[in-house]
Length: 217
Figure (cartoon, rainbow, N blue to C red):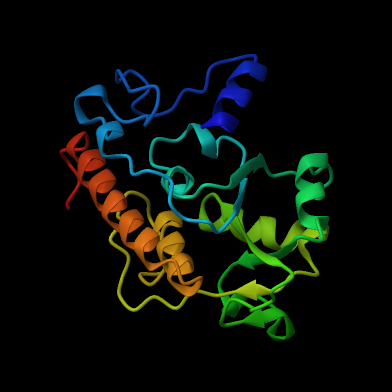
């Protein structure tokens, strides 16, 4: 949400999309009648996250990366750039305190970079990098970002189909950002925070769909 405010301050024209006439809560971006702010959990997870967001993604009410940010104490968000990444982002990626880990499907990543568990290193904190956008945008970010090419790739293997249903996925097994966040927190050993995020996401989805009567729950 802080990134959204920065982008709004720099924008020379309003971001207009479907549903732009709806009166929305400034904090959760849902219609005021369906606001979820009262259900926002206290930040509890210690795992740090970095969100690399496609242009315009931070404006979308359907974005669920912000749900992870509400649950995690340490999170950073940047608009993705192929050739001009922000100095603050590069500082995080090169900070010796962190071990950056890209979250991305293994079937689209080189085998030598793929890992299936969070590395245990007492000297480094895992820094989870989320490529936040449509599946096509996330794929482009993964392939085109030279500054990400040396980091390991953690793939999430969902045990059940996504409950998201607010955007069309290329495959039924693909999870939305918040659902991936739940699985990452489990792998990081933060089960109470994973459970809190799971329930928060389900409430978000229920409230979001209230404003879309043509959608099927």
